Length: 136
Image 1 (cartoon, one colour):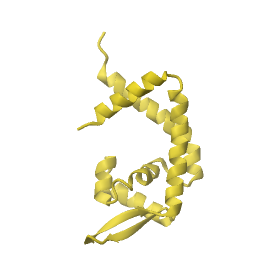
Image 2: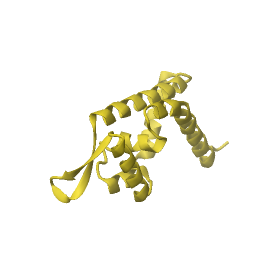
Image 3: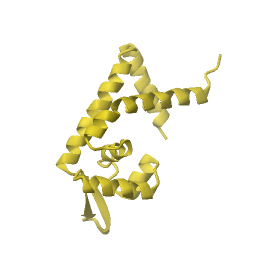
């Protein structure tokens, strides 16, 4: 029997949603909305707002709102890019790094709790498969 791609997508989405929901109290305790967490988690690899919007696949206006909120909370700051003075670069503050790290730890703990249900060999295979699926 062939595997239905839409069903696999749905199962994956449900798993991610369940894990995020299980961590929502921890994120709220850090003063973070879920999407703000994603901005904090990605800003190191994508430090420019337009790049961040493309990476996270969210509208630029939403990134602007999250950046404003995170800046007001003292978790993020905007700096002029020394290589191109017309651009702003986003940088995590020490408090932002700490919040990101705590949120990532909460997500990792919850996801690991679910991964414990499968063998180490299957975990390795899952990592390989997900990596393959993310390649361009």
